[in-house]
Amino acid sequence: MAANSRLTIATHALAWLALAQRRGQEVLTSDQVAASVNTNPVIIRRSLGDLRRAGLVTVRHGAGAGWSLARPPEEITLRQVYDAVAAEPPFGLHHTEPNLKCPVGRGIRPALSAVYVRVEQAMQQELATTSIADVLRESLMR
Amino acid sequence: MAANSRLTIATHALAWLALAQRRGQEVLTSDQVAASVNTNPVIIRRSLGDLRRAGLVTVRHGAGAGWSLARPPEEITLRQVYDAVAAEPPFGLHHTEPNLKCPVGRGIRPALSAVYVRVEQAMQQELATTSIADVLRESLMR
DNA sequence: ATTACTGTAACTAGAATTGTTACACCATAC
DNA sequence: GTATGGTGTAACAATTCTAGTTACAGTAAT
Image 1 (cartoon, rainbow over the protein chains, first blue to last red):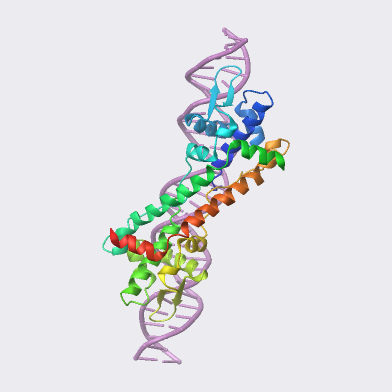
Image 2: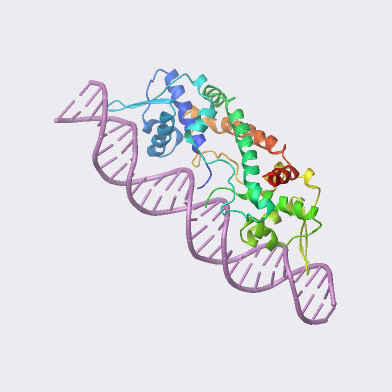
């Protein structure tokens, strides 16, 4: 059960909120979102909690509580969602420190770190080209 | 122990092979590579095995055995290494099938798949811009 | 006050990665 | 041919991550 579906879950929740909003339902409970994603409401609350901390959704407490988008779906990009859910970066360095007596072992970590930073930036740039509105539109097309 | 260091380990091994080759040592054993990476020789044999299957290194068996680069380090890119070690893709879809009665649940998987394909392509394009020779040069600079 | 839902802790289950031991197999050199 | 040194791989332990689940205190509308 170890594939990273956090970005998927969060994006699904946001798209569903966007559609509900368009249909005039201004808030959804975690139960209602969980029914579409087909998972446990706690998973949704955790995910929406990340998005709330990033300012992408708002929550209402008390009776009649629930979640809404904090801004129009056109202005929420998957890059913002990616940053909000803070999944692990795709590549990690050595678990144990390499042999510093070896010239490669000494210099490879900063060298690879620089590469990995560029790779993550490339990912983020690509994610920035797609909005929740785009995802919703593509989803409804199928 | 769950961060993905496969690309790091493989790249380190290749850079070390490249340097050894430059110094006139045409083959290295998995023990010698493991001494620089500071890990178990079996990890290195597994990693170099992946690279061998991808045609990036060659192996010699029997007495005097060991590993060599199959081509010049300038012609081995990190994209080839990434493809060879076949780590998990950065994003996964839902673990459980979404609710197909929901319009979002019905269409979101193909919509997100298309996004994730583009993201992985962006990653691969960026990885293709760096060769083992580049990594070795950067490492020796530090 | 009641009510309905959020926020979060605590725990289980499953999977992936790394590390480790062990050993069969192989090709080279003598 | 035989000894030798290293590969290839299976099997297993330890660690860590994700997802899922239950439970319950906190909170704000009505």
